[in-house]
Image (cartoon, rainbow, N blue to C red; front, side):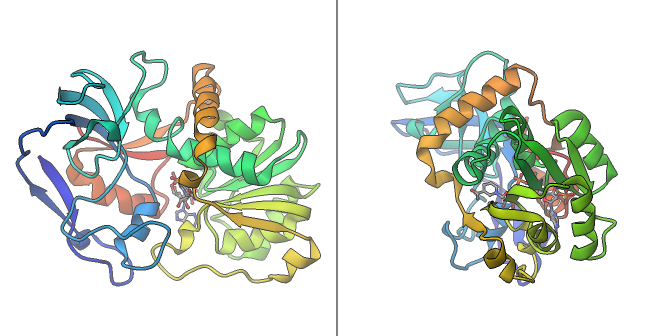
Length: 333
Ligand code: NDP
């Protein structure tokens, strides 16, 4: 079983030296466990935070252990009543080709191909539900509201667009580069997407946002922070809601800061951070809606797929720099 372990913690920016590829034999299967061959590994921004030994909402990744991570795969052997060889499952198998976990740790997936297997790690998985929770539980938009999302073409952002359009919102994205913006408008359903890269500072980006949100912004879904957040805040309307989902601009470097906190007072804004796992009641309705959108052809986001476990670290660092185009995955088989 090939696996990638966390060999050391980053001192500043993370690097390939922090990971180590190793091979370990699979032990015999214990009663209640299943042996799963992973087909896809999900790479997610939160993994960068877990590489540090600092206080966060999840425990740090243990050194010397395979990196944690969401996986989908197929049961090859089972000593658990509820799962049989051939079943397709979703769970936290980690950065390795195989795993052996208690059967109850896995979710059995539908057998039909109406939803591609990899989508259970993206659009119809944790990132999709994250978009649903931030939109419905925090932003709570009305039809006709303008809602804005950063990292618009990514795993969370792409699901956000389909959900916001279904609620009749004027849906605006911010993404890095003309290709990502064209994709956001032509394939994801954004009414418009603004490329932040040509803008040297928040004032310049804010001006570009004003042109595409002439009536201001009711709801902002924040994935990035830093310059992008500072550009959006002056565009917020009175009583606007901000769902603080992620601050990826600061994950591998300096934390991001808010330039002008008085905007919160002047515009009576409400900002709420949230963690998707703390909204258990939202998962079933969110997954149902996201699955229906995929089946109806209204949510067909692209994915960036690295081939082979050995390419996971490079793909992970690429994602932290915006090299991914949609959900970043590693194909393991
Ligand atoms: P994405 O698929 O969106 O990939 C990350 C994207 O972030 C990159 O493609 C890049 O897009 C953008 N990005 C990276 N670095 C920067 C930077 N310095 N400045 C601006 N943009 C940057 O990832 P996800 O959709 O999986 O995650 C999006 C956000 O949601 C993350 O912040 C993540 O931590 C958060 N999240 C939070 C959850 C929660 O429960 N709160 C759950 C899941 C995700 P571009 O090229 O457009 O800049």
